[in-house]
Image 1 (cartoon, rainbow, N blue to C red):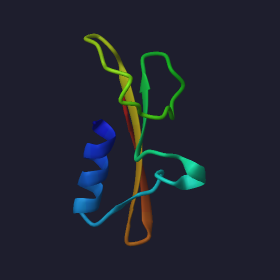
Image 2: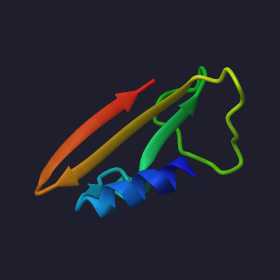
Image 3: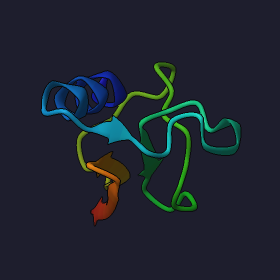
Length: 72
């Protein structure tokens, strides 16, 4: 769900999700839960639980410029 929201937001503002399709990466965001290695692939099978720590890394491009953002 978060990946879809991120992609729709980026595209609605004229951007392109830079990670999606990069060397075959299937998603807009990199999502990791708790102690997983950063740059995990989001999955509908994984559900967040109360108290989980979510790390999101997102790269988008607009007008040829790429911006990278990570939040924990």
